[in-house]
Length: 213
Image (cartoon, rainbow, N blue to C red; front, side):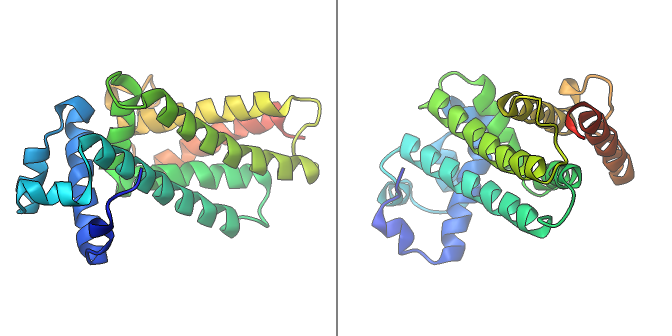
């Protein structure tokens, strides 16, 4: 979903402030509860100004979604490039750790993701969640295919099954880290960094026993 030309005419710092302020509102209250009035109040601009940048609340929300996906894409691309010579399960470990770091630095983005997971009134919700899962699947598929070509991943296990399993485990781990009531016993929410890294190492070790060679 495109913003209007007037939005792109803004200085980059102001564009970022508009997006981050709106993101904070959506992540706190969900799509239905988010208020354009409160967004413009936080920004200190007239209400009409936001409609010079976006057609309506839906177009603002959808643009923010694409903005967030691009942030995640850039982070994972960097991880992939930085670990291209590393063993496959080290790459998986670093990818999961990157997810933890992303939540730490962008908590409102992850809160927004969880809101979208559970709020049915989000526009194009199914398509947006499908896009997230497809993005994650493509990333993990490339890692596992490279690992299989190197002889580090079992060839007798279906690749799609491995991707589904890995995606589910990583997503669930990050949920447990981000939200205390989603933690089912690992005590990740208030864990120290060494404890988080230990848990990730244990998790990756179990995966390696199952699908590694």
